[in-house]
Length: 493
Ligand code: UN1
Image (cartoon, rainbow, N blue to C red; front, top):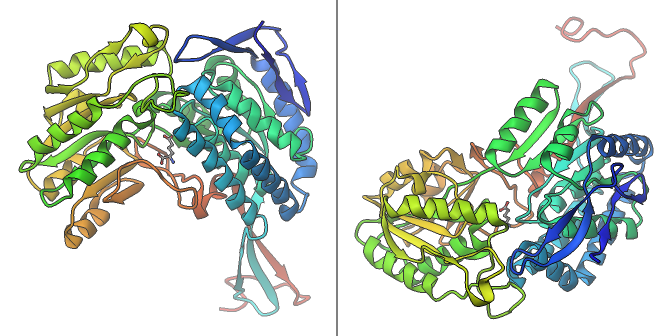
């Protein structure tokens, strides 16, 4: 019988109140990996209650002490990196070097966030009145809800919850139903690190049954979400109407610009890695190349050749370059766009799902490249979230920047050139939250702000020096030690 994994509420491991469960499947083999609590609004309510109780003491625990627990969690994660990576590859499908990287982001984030426990600097400033003190400090907000995706099952919960915990908030965590086991380990590790009961609660279940009640619950002050633009915008609308702080990280359609003077071998390697790493299922994945017309054909040929050589299979096999799509629905989306692409561009490689032999039970698809795609073609504009790349011909840098910035999304972008003047022009003009020069569109580091413009986000950045912003309120404090009534803007004018 499959192992049972329970919710964690108020320090106890509990089945869902309804007793129902759902299965966690391996997308490469179809194997059932475990049974998880299928929760609903009752379980969310219990978790919010536990988190609200815990908030009373957690907000008063000194920040360096809160941070020590996060640091200890980082040490445990480091010791278990390989085990966690294997759990993640089994349930998510991406290859082991990538799942190790995902866990490494969690370790990096733990140490980075833990350091903030002894910083979290506020600002002191002179008052306009004599004998009066003025300063501003960060305060925690309360119970925060976290709705996280399946593509970075360890890194994204880490970016979100580690700073939130150091800041003094308590958490209700709903991970994606496709990757619940990695999330279960995340919470177990914090329990082992000594996080008090109720501070971090996990409730497994679907977006409708658990995500919506989190967004709607009056006890939740902040909702932090990473996932699709449709779901994110719905959360933004609903949560915004309830006056909550909503931090959204959503879709992307990230471009790599390759100018005619670029190192084409380097650009090819970066494009293939950015487009087909994680089976194209990163928010930061490159899904369009904007190639200068002079090198378009040669670049397309090189990229297609390298992509065709990639081995597709079970991510636990170290010789594999690319794992499966996460589930049947995602594979069908990829197939739908490949069919659309056949009418919009020239298929340079790939184009088919892999169904026989070792691929029979998984959701595998070939790395697929379309060349000569028009800049406004659907495959060049819409997010696919799979191993499908469009190569678009552009006239010059200005044209490439215009095409990049016309996207509904604005997460990451990249330029390959040896010309420092054009590189700096691109750094200034590319309208995305992340810009790379002579590097692909993936691989953001945890100590820089992560997030995007336009349809990608709603103005928040995660991690980096901005890590506390979504999870703290600024409080301005004035202390008058003059012993008399001093009226600002009146008595000193
Ligand atoms: C995501 O796809 O949502 O920059 C996150 C990167 C990784 C994180 C991606 N560090 O590609």
